[in-house]
Image (tube, rainbow, N blue to C red; front, side, top):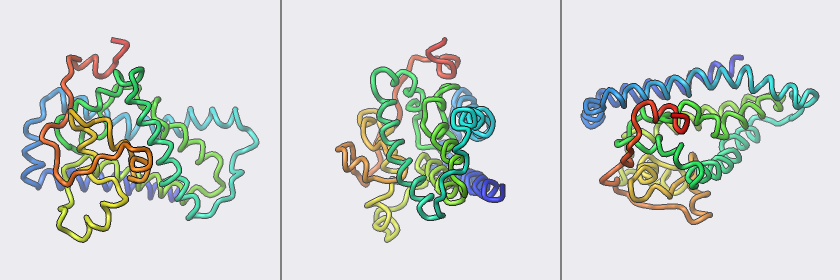
Length: 250
């Protein structure tokens, strides 16, 4: 329980820190000022689902499901801290890469397009989705499975919390300058906000699917590199608020 609380503190602290930076940054503050009421509402609902309802679903219904499907396998994986972290931060990241590409196929794009209606890199828009899109994202199922199977989930949870913190950051406007040593160190392997901004670009959104690592995009030919930010972020959509929340059921 202690490590779970620590992981939650990392995620919540990252969110509060990025929101605080946005409020105190001129560019970020300007972005918040132009957000519509609909944007505020759908982003708030998305963050509530991702930050509260999904963890509750993982801890109850999904965990219960694995208890019934795999009744004798609970705690069967004896993995130390570092390998467990690698499974989470690297292995699951590769699975998410393909999960994300699947969401961009013809069959699932109509649902995933809601996430791409954000028109600016904004930490509040990180979880913008339909109410049920999280059911299609591998994190809900794979994280709960490993937490059920691992005898000691400490390293795995650390990977989960770092991935979640990076997810918030790469959707924000906190850009690392290309002239810094930090950029030179991170840009070769880590997905940065400017990389993900190109994924949200209206014309280039079929690139940069990765969450943590660039290696998957580079390996499969879906990496788009640019030190500049795109001029136009987000796609146009004719969906109204209720359609964005319940599509395709409404």
